[in-house]
Length: 201
Length: 201
DNA sequence: TAAAATATTGAACAGCGTTCACGTATTATT
DNA sequence: AATAATACGTGAACGCTGTTCAATATTTTA
Image 1 (cartoon, each protein chain N blue to C red):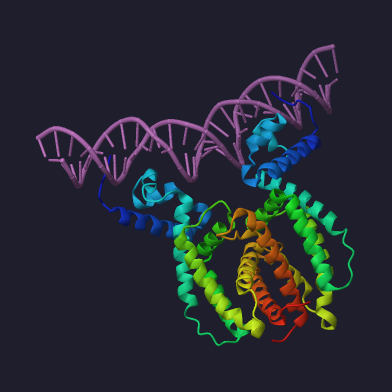
Image 2: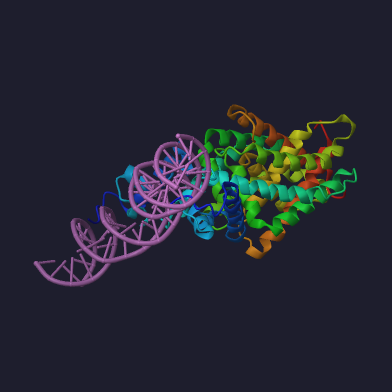
């Protein structure tokens, strides 16, 4: 068998990424396999590797799009200049996004966790974009004296991931959702108060 | 082949858990396979299932011991009653433990992340024990008015896991360690200040 | 039209967790 | 002591995985 030219290289790549996105969104990242994608698009497993380095690379491509979607939501925010209000706005958008696309977001997290995977430049760019939004929201908390905004954002971001990664034991599945929301809100609230309180013990 | 009685049921289980611990500690959780364990203890893969439900169960057993070790370290702490000092003490012990047993700790985290795995009661008990220590450390931050200590500890714990899970991109491998330490310290510092600042916006 | 380049395949590789029929060594019963 | 019952260990097998690659069919170029 050989060149079918049903699709160009770009079309095929698009097809692969779209299908992968669909599969992750509907069944979750662990259910994503090359053979499933291949079956769904009517190509063989091997063909996927003509268009993508490997499965991790493909997941990064999906994640990049997910981040772009989140960023689109985040840029809708109108900042007020009050760090607490604005941070709450960012958190609300973030929570909504998570709820709308739980599996896609889990895929982002799962990859963020892996130190071995080197993320493509374009993906890191999207991350930076959402960090920038978060930075704008919390910066006023430092007041006149300033501070390491980058560090503050990194920590808040990582912490949020933690809240949503660690699965609370001994809770009914139905309550996990609400509990995490509560935790996330408490985290942002407390953290921002801490930022306000500022340097010195 | 059949009953060899080289080891009793308990001895074999101990052997399996010990070997798994060794393999995780030296090669990391992803390298742990039933076949490797079997080879190392001179039994067949199938025999492991006589003594343990499945691989996840085995990992939980290993994690339980890891938590016990951490708790042993944590109980060495002499609390002063000042929340900032005591939290720093807890964090310091935690960081030291992480550094001494990075792979074992990663195994704990990897499992903490998975919502599908139901942890054994005995394991949850160990978690509770360290939570209790953390609770003792931060409680004074609430002052007279009190507050939801449980929520506060849950959030701090999850946040810490986040800081150590999310791998900072664009950093040299050598710096990741220091960066995380910095982040963890900033988190605890800021969070505790926030707790002090207390209710109300 | 012949030759070179390229896309696609599907079998193959090496690995994984887990299961299970089988046979043997130990234990219990007679 | 001889026999029956039980428990245990085995190793092959199942159904997966990501990835590679020789072979082949098609398209493009000469």
